[in-house]
Image (cartoon, rainbow, N blue to C red; front, side, top):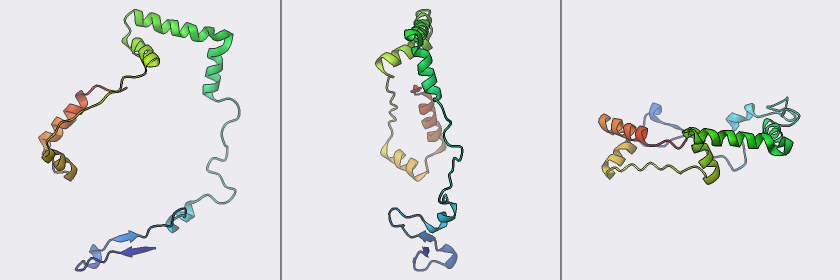
Length: 139
């Protein structure tokens, strides 16, 4: 059920339909036709039977007393020693955890309010996007 706003002086076309709040745990009337019927599923095939991909991967890496895993780790170490930054970064991330990246944007309060209002001048948008693009990525 909806009600209209009671703004005095508003024309009929200016009035907004406002949804009444639902009691907690109930489904709004407009959504009821789209709910699953009793005994019906949104995933009739269900989850595939058998081990998941990650389970199969873990088993493969642990087979032969973890020999494959040790070989893969050695490949990453060798590549890092040869100068592969990606392999070095991966090893450091796994050992020490990834480095947290923070982007600090300094701005005057007036400019922050302009952003919130959506009235920031174009050149400020350009500068803001440039600062964000130049910030180091956390990936």
